[in-house]
Image (tube, rainbow, N blue to C red; front, side, top):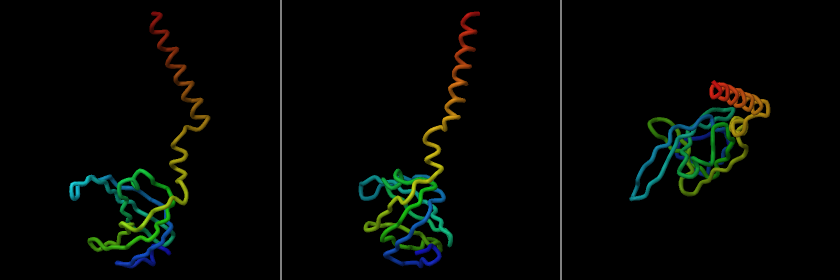
Length: 131
């Protein structure tokens, strides 16, 4: 299913899309239980839609990840369609975003530059101590 095919109040949605961005995490307290929610913007070749990420989902996915929403539900809020997994739906990771993979560890050339900078600073510090 594509984003452009989604309709308000549509259930049993199965969709594969990329997370274009994730908004700020908001904390709430409902019925004495704390929780967190963030709004992610999903995109595919046909359009974009907002997706609610709840609690642990916020930590599982990041910008650039390709995800699959299974048994999602489309709701309408202030004239905008939003996708949610509700209590019965799930989100699966299809592919980790390249941006995150590159950000986790510096490339070998970057590590070499970092080491050179550290050595240079250490030598400068030794010169100051000698004076």
